[in-house]
Length: 485
Length: 52
Image (cartoon, rainbow over all chains, first blue to last red; front, side, top):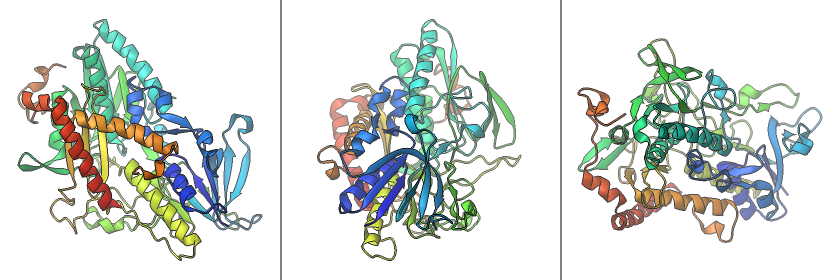
């Protein structure tokens, strides 16, 4: 009998949990630990952020779902990993702290035979002074609750616009090292869309600000698409959409500080600028959630298990190399920690070997370059691979048996550019592989047959379909196993 | 804020391509978008098959 503990119940953690539940015989235990009582279909938070959906349409209660299974759910946050046991407890275990109101703060130790770290990102609003909804001057769409608050503030702006007032809206990234430009990209076009639907777009100045070298980078170094008889960089299409919607853009920018109504930023040429705003949604940079690790003698070995970013080291090649020497082979395949064979990290929780985009820094030495994206599709693929590997290892395999390298898989992204059954649209994009592989595809790093993009109503229908399908699947409704992940 | 303000020569909006009327129309034409919906789903399934 084995016990698998999963820290985190987001897209990666919950996918691992439901696949383990299906694959493993009943005598094996599965424990899911999550500080949040609810699962959130994050891609639809953008629609909550513009009032097109309610918070409850993008979330559901985890405890209710896990009651249908033999998965033991604990509402708590992971504090520390003890992969060698400790001086008082022989077996490997994790220390968790309850976030349930009735037992808040209570600590518990859970032993494990296998541990999957799927803790996702810490939304590091603190990295930029004045960033974020809690202690700053900007809104966020990273969580359903944040998105709901963002919409509330957006509606106040819309009312002002209806009175004929002029407002400036700034959307993008809140630090020079952010990822998740795609979410901000969706949000800016959905804001534009709702303003047009409200008949007030002409009173708003909308500005994009990001750390990308060029629009369309998305942390993947951009993408080339074959369209209209040419192979064109995605920058052209991204700029086209900005111009079409009358949106200005600022790129190569590190947001340094935000005051009420004013964004201070530095650009790659080392100069400093200010941008006044009335409403702003800026994505925060991500870091690991802050898990610690201790050895058998209770000595801190966090630096051995985790990278400086707080993300967990896995089977990636972390050797420091210049950009020209990066390779697709640097990226992890099994997501197994190199020090402990029963420890894995998936989704956003694993430490990438380096960026995908070319590293850039300003003339003042400020890094201004997007971090690599870890979106839903690859996160789910990692979760399934690790779940299957663990099953095989329980049955005697010496090493993980399944792989899910981002250099050998694709991603599909559907970025809504306005929600409406007949007047909506979305930019649908696929890339293969996510991490460019110049050995296999020397010219553009990607398979151009599987890398494409287009804008239209069909994309909006697809995004709506995906919303309902993935929530249905995550709720473990009948037939969920037959739906693609 | 308006298209005219943003289309000054040598400013950022002067250069990127913008869709023609027919392109914009086809993006929301129901029949054409039904075809594109099928094509996009097919492409995605191809991608997923290669990725797994």
